[in-house]
Image (cartoon, rainbow, N blue to C red; front, side):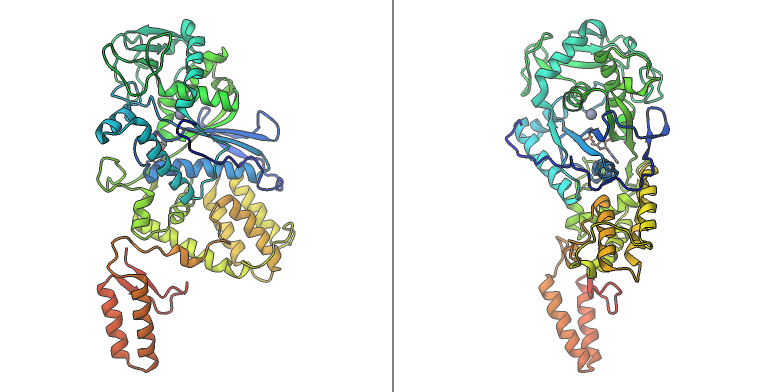
Length: 502
Ligand code: AMP
Ligand code: ZN
């Protein structure tokens, strides 16, 4: 690994033995249909997720892509598959425009912050991993770091250079007319694809893209490698083709990313995969390198705070600073279908967090109960089957959550049975309901003008005043707290005595 960071691989083990067995059906963007998942290697699921370009903090929209990939992985584990999940970290090669225009995002940020690219990469990768942990996204089998694979990228490029590429003064370019069905994933005509800009002089087709970008004569880049085409750096699309092939083998099962990747990045990966494998028409999805391509839709924010150029942009840390536990955001994501747009608002986030708090409160009596080895109570097995059916229906987490709600509120069943069921469902939803303490969900906003200890002390005085029937004093304390943005919540069904106004 490039910067001596350690990551812990996991997630190869299935969460559970296969459940009753609704066939797992997933939407394949390549065919635009829902298909039954059939693994390339029986019993195993190999998944590649396009990871972040570590030039800045991820915003919560970016994190939706990883909550989605994590959910897919958890469902595959729930269905009994041994999961091999790779997420890459792009630390070189991603230009400010996906279609070969602009400059390298990493180089640009390093210059702006007057730091080395390696320092930028280390800092933002660690920040990304902190968000991964905060959102309970499981560690993948491997974080693949692009700069660790440059020799393999050069070998890949050499293997396809004569048959699929041409050289220009600025680098080696992939000729998209050399593969069948280019752009099918995007449903775009080769030369008119969205966002195509004829940015590089000499390109044969507007959609042709850089496999290798040469360092211009007389310049020195912070990150550059020798290659048969001169000193330079690999193209971003090449990186993912190479790392997925190296770590998962072609074809593998599922390739994921945000829906924007359906337009340029993934069609280009597919073209490269066709070139290296010598495979033809995409009528056979496997020729694309993966049997399925899955994309999450966008998180939308109308206030514009998701733009990384806006000062205070929507990062997981901003949610925490404002007093929202990050798992409220996980809940918000899971309440929507991954293929639907999801609109962010603070109210939606607060509602999602309240739902999570209710769940935690409701399962708390099961905390010290030992789970039964299997769920076999006649009141509970139908719930597990419905939960399975919802998730097997292209990951319908919204319905699965309502089944989880039902499971939590089911009465008159043995506690060990109920605990076993909740554990199983929670392993897929990823909240850790039985380990979370409801007090942990209350986060003190960064800019609050009053500390928790001061609030608790004021409330203790108020209790005394009420016990002494001094309601004037009690009301005065309540009003005083209100001026400091603290709402006193008498009789709150969740047992919260106070909350800070958002
Ligand atoms: P990037 O670091 O820009 O390559 O983006 C990381 C991931 O976030 C990619 O899979 C993108 O497709 C995805 N993504 C970017 N913006 C959003 C958004 N607003 N909502 C959901 N996913 C997004
Ligand atoms: Zn990628």
